[in-house]
Image (cartoon, rainbow, N blue to C red; front, side):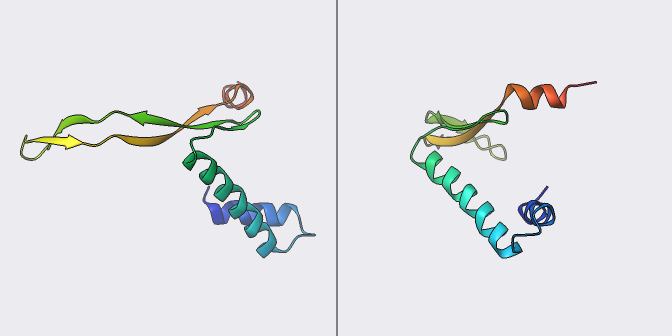
Amino acid sequence: MTKSELILKLAERNPHLYQRDVEKIVTTIFDEITEALARGDRVELRGFGAFSVKRRDARTGRNPRTGEAVDVHEKFIPFFKTGKQLRERLNTD
């Protein structure tokens, strides 16, 4: 599902809201999650999962084409861990 598909689905389920308002709501939620992660905070949505940031140390890697050693700088990556309710819902038979 893309962001625009999510907005359309939410607008269909909430006919009392204008689509532009639904778009603003979804964008605001995503922006707040992004800003919290940028600050290094953890974002937990009960029953769905938790977003956090993991640190990858600097290391020496290899260029796959030439085999030459390359310095890879430290970086931070987003990480998502599913919540118990989501896992259970996905794995019901």
